[in-house]
Image (cartoon, rainbow, N blue to C red; front, side, top):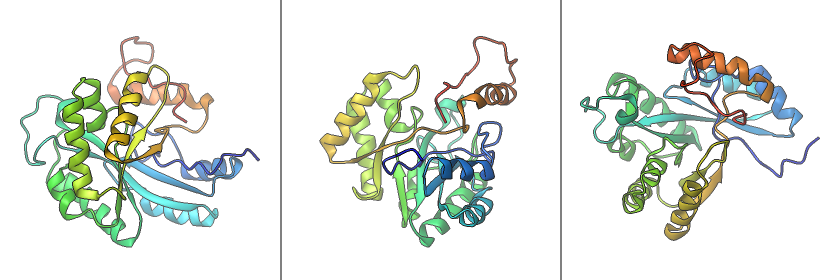
Length: 246
């Protein structure tokens, strides 16, 4: 059995990340056991539709389930619907429940995303996070997270303000800067993220933004993304995930 040095996936999309994730839970837990992982998280996009199935099947396979969500954060108020594109209307943020209170707050936040903040995507905002953050751990997410977006723009000052806003909500024990390394990523962004985390005393967490289980699953997942974006699989200018998000 491979020595994974205790690594646990904390950013993972199941088939409940509709037309984006391609992971069935039974196969996920089988793969975890093959890799010697005794725990795994699920962080589907904007929803918790798979939470009960994930939890019950994980326990049946003797895997510790970590329930989470990759939520969409409105740049201002969740009630504001003036942005003109999906990318401008929300950032990403990973939230993980550390106890039953956190799980209940995740349910409330997911519900508010659909009933109050929906605009292109089910969105929440920092105001409701301030009210419902107890029992939750936050990670800064992928390159579409608010922190990484500001760094990609070269706005380090604003990136620091963003990090400080999340520290104010979650505190230094429950907010982490997320580091990912995929094909085609800009290494300067990761360096800036690490530098900022060190400057502010924020912990780092390494994730892989998992969307499929094996490298051989990439082509099937590629076709799924083509359906999601309304493109043909052979169109060269459409969104294509790197082969290493597994």
